[in-house]
Length: 338
Ligand code: ADP
Ligand code: MN
Ligand code: MN
Ligand code: MN
Image 1 (cartoon, rainbow, N blue to C red):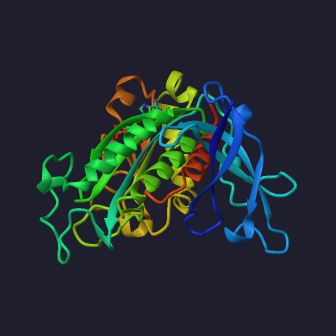
Image 2 (image 1 turned 30 degrees about the vertical axis):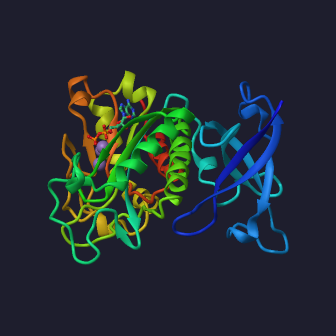
């Protein structure tokens, strides 16, 4: 038996962007066998997180995923859903709105800026760095500065230790902008991992006096915004698919354009302008290998007889992957299968 440090993590009730919250529960257990099943229901003061009134402040935390935390002795990161006192899902609980589907696979690409003293890392104190061009996948102090890579590498290692399924990382188009990609099987799994990866990133930045800026367009002008492309597939899309089904799917995405945009992150009109590898917010389009489309169809999809995954490029970096996954699966669910 050891004293385990369980970091219970949840999304608060702030609008339009929920914050990650966490508090530590000490429990007795064997760290070598400890798992989600060993995590008890817990609670918190919802009146301090915009999730309850002071007079009836209790909210419950229902553990839904558990990851080892290599930064703490006997530590675990426990992602939670927020429940009302009667154990029904709290209105802020986007995860509870995702259709259960083990055959649904998601890959999210999180873009973000690292900020210090109100400026992206590596930017001069006033004015702007050199125009975009050399930074994307760049190497060298001029391209990426010094501190950023330290943080990015540390974040990656902690995530890999946690069993989070990173698929890659890269420096992005704007200076101080980075990306990581996570892939997961199951309708809720990738979004769980994404929230925990965000939590780890923010925590890892604390000691450097750095913050993560998730806003989708921190700078107007000729600076890329930040997205969170949502790559998705269902078992039917991967194994049956076909051109007719694909076209019906795209028609449903077009019909539900506004419903999708509503959960794809705030201020997206600043980012989805038709420039900087985006389609404008009031248009819907798809195209093979088209990074200026709302939905990019990979070459492999067409070559395999319209089977495989698609990339919705519209979700932004502040979007809640729970709400994004829920909306994507809801639209797919509206389309009849052959
Ligand atoms: P790009 O930047 O060119 O859009 P990335 O390599 O950054 O491409 O991201 C592609 C994403 O697609 C990865 O996150 C990957 O996990 C995801 N992906 C690959 N195959 C599938 C699939 N069958 N279903 C869902 N997502 C997938
Ligand atoms: Mn990418
Ligand atoms: Mn990118
Ligand atoms: Mn992409």
